[in-house]
Length: 135
Image 1 (cartoon, rainbow, N blue to C red):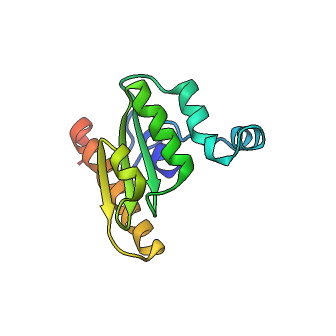
Image 2 (image 1 turned 45 degrees about the vertical axis):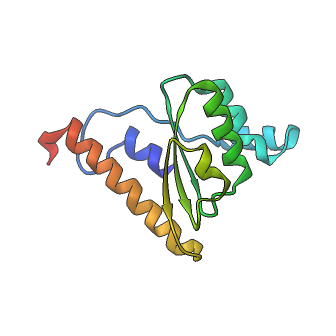
């Protein structure tokens, strides 16, 4: 959600919004997890919303989050580019990513702290390219 908000809102200074959507609306999560299981929450939403040419970013500290793996499998079938922010050895997700950014180590909190730094670096880099007047 934080990543999508930075695109549709702003990061450093005012600029036009960029299109982004965080999968996992609470009503959707409840509905799909009740009917299909928690492992399907992102895959079902991506199946309905994702289009060839889109980009999906998935975060998994272990690289083995089944709900994110299933979403990346849907992405592959639909021609959607995937970027994984992963931890430890990249787990099962590393082979499903077009780009896997793996933070080695065993401490989940440290992996997640590096992931948020990566998110902020990516956002600032894109803003610098698209909106150089802000920098």
